[in-house]
Image 1: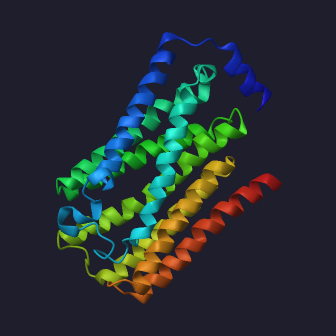
Image 2: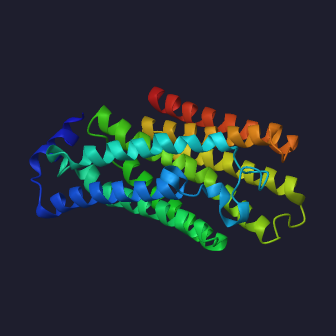
Length: 276
């Protein structure tokens, strides 16, 4: 813990607003996570890949990650649950970093649950708007985390690490969502063909991963979380194109390269920052 961070969190007394935020974020996050888990297929709900006529299934487009990729949600939900408990502890009521991010984390969870509800209804075009809003909210959290120093290593893991995984995965999912929506609308090829546009989207994912790495290099847990999640998602795009029913080795190898770029960019940015 830095002296400045320790001092600010200890000398600023909690307010009624802080206490309300703690309780609302805890209860709201648990409800949102439960709704999202049910909507994603847990507890008897309908799995996302079975909704919208299968437009979001693992073999719907060449940039759709294979089904095992979605296991990352278990880690993200666990991280969000731990964060919800962490932020409600009395000693964290007035922590400036939590004041700046907790409401936004809750907003992201509500948007995630809303996205699942939208795709369950089959509204693919609306799902793009919702996931774009979700990514924008996560970007706000990332900016606020980069601009402030973690109070402790625990906070860095619980908050920065979780938001990193969340942001990295949603970054990949947003591109896959756009591809699925265009394909379902019958405009997915747009002159380049499915393979050409899929390679373009995978390349954009690699560029985005590098941009995230450069921006978050000062916050190791955040940078590594984003890099790991994007690398994971892109690796499963490759697996799906190598072995799935929608085989496309060109896209597969492009996804392998993008996955490597995402991981190396995050690790490299952190190492360079530490040496500097």
